[in-house]
Every structure is written in structure tokens, then in C-alpha cells.
Length: 219
Image (cartoon, rainbow, N blue to C red):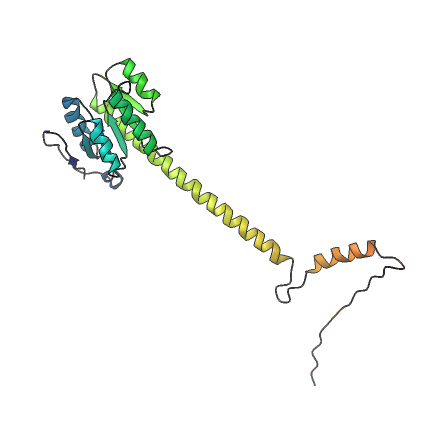
């Protein structure tokens, strides 16, 4: 069940009737300067099943990140073309480089939208904000990020399995060439050794083969 961690005066946020287990652990870092946007964003994020870590300034958002917050989604209306917004985007890019933490940018015009995409926003929403559309986009961004993380873990497991198979194959190829009981070379290696010896055999270079057998006598 979603809960809101408010850092501003806001109306009570209605909790969803039920939320899937995967959604109950989703955390949205919401960094919005506009008070109206702040309240509306908190409401739709909570209704969509997110825990909301709200910050009224980029500084508060940066402090939350420095305390170890790892959000599933970041929503911000700070323009990437301004110093405060640029600092936030740079911090997100530095902390989550190579990870799948999408940023949904809330933009006032085309210029802000362009700047947000250039600095790494995964998606954007322009004024007037349609919060239903925002919910759908946020859900898709998070699902895509979760899929990317799952694929990354799967690739790691496949690499580990491949290395284990290669190691087992190398060990098996080594033991297969020798008798497991005596440790002596197998018949194939004996044949190849004889072939090499016979090729070099001559009147002065003799080849001898000793055949050792064991017998069991009973009276």
C-alpha cells in the first residue's frame, strides 16, 4: 500500500484500494517547485501505487539521494536549462549511471522539453498536465526499467553458466584422455603415440611395445 512522505503542506492523499506486490515497493522521488504541481503529482503517484519521497527543491532532492535513497522513478518540474534543474539531472546521471532509473520531466514549453531530453529524461509531459496520461507513462517507464534490470540479471546468470560449462568441459576433456583407475593414457593416445614412433622407426631406431596383463589364478 502506498504512503506519502510529504515535505510540504498537502491535502491527504487517498490510498489505493489494492496494489500489487511489485508496485508496493516502488518509490518515486518527486522534485517539484510548483506547489500546485507538487500536490497533484503526489496524489496521482500515490494512487498509482508509488511511495512518494517528495522534495520541494532540487537541494532537498539531492539531500535525499545523498542519504541513500534509490528511487524507482524520478519526477521533476525543474527546468534542465536552469542551474538548479541541471544540477539535479547531473546528480541523477552520476548516481544512477548504467542503472534503469527513469526520469519523467514535467515541462512548461518546447524549449524545456528539448533541454530535458538532452540531459537524459526518459519521457516528458507538457502543460497543461494530464495526470491520467502521466500515470500511464510512469507505469510504462517503471515496467521498462524493471524489464531492463531483469534482463541484466539474466545476462549475468547466463555468463556465469557459460563459464561453468566451459570449465567443466575443460576438466572433462582432460580426464577423458586418461584411465580413471590407473591414470595412464587411454587407447587413442596410445595409438597416436605408436603412429608417431613407427614413422620414425628405422634399423637404428627401434620401437618396442611392452604389453602387461594380469591374470587371476584359482585352484
